[in-house]
Image 1 (cartoon, rainbow, N blue to C red):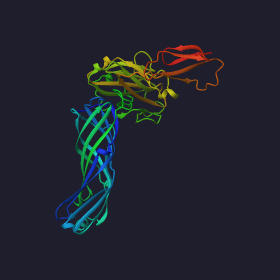
Image 2: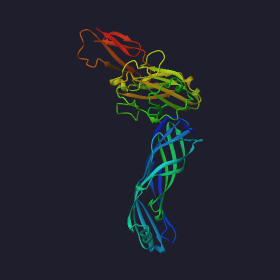
Image 3: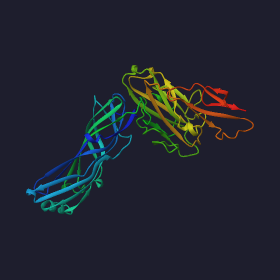
Image 4: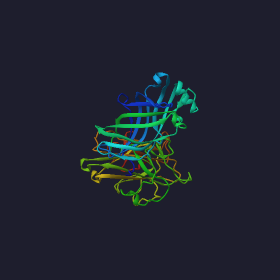
Length: 440
């Protein structure tokens, strides 16, 4: 089953007290195999994406980095101790060989899932000393009787199957994952021995709030094409679109995913398209929805094909080449603009947000996009934020008059009015963005 973008990405520290890495060394110098195991606690992290913040039906394993907390000691013996292979393994661990949002989703049934075909790379330095027949076997394989094997020099492998569970309780996600891999001491000579690494991982972290948290994964199309209207539909096939976590855009240096603007930096694409799918098990349980949008310059937001928010965009039909009303600079580049949505727009099961972000001009220097959608929002009456964007030199006023432009947003409300004052006296007001007033 192929999922589109996921609802939330969670970085989960490993719970060291309950997570372990057992390393087993096995070798056969020609007189039979002997094995030894040592176990240490684990440290590190998992990065997972979930398609629902309440009861996930899909989980993607985006990244992991796991390390044993101490040096492991492994001792093999033959002929009542006359032949020995003793090894210490330092900094042993596993990490994801191909991290990122391109990793697939695995179905969650109840709380259980199985991650399959996960690319991994092992690390660790195994220092060893061998005697008698164990030494002879190493020499026959072209290795000295005392030396070291660096597991990081071996090629990456694939975890065929890793069973796990995921649960969310009181906003905290907990993942259990069981990984077993076999690593040869020397990829060029498998007969020298094997290391089997068995990781039992428990990790947990708070899930970002909301149906669609900030920093979520989004499918995007940044090739300058004209998608017209079909791309807004929930059933539109976006599986060929690239995927990446927000913030998305270019030009500011704070992007988690960098979009492309075309071959000519002086003639950038006006429109970039974004899509994101999320699951809602019981839409009737939501009494309110609040959407917050970061857009540079302008954007139109659709929920399940319905236009729900138009920010810094003109009225009328919006096309690929429709510019934003004005360019965004200064503090407004980092403002989130809030809008209440009708919860009746939610569908049971899969829902899709589609957003088109428009530049004000082909020469615009940057583009930014992020969005969150929260349901049953707890109103905390946070204050609105307002800032004057121009003129920037407030100490000098032209004698012929000038225009004051401002931006305003409210994290838990909607801006209905911006008032302008001069020396404490109100001189005018503006009812809609872009908020401005002429001053003589």
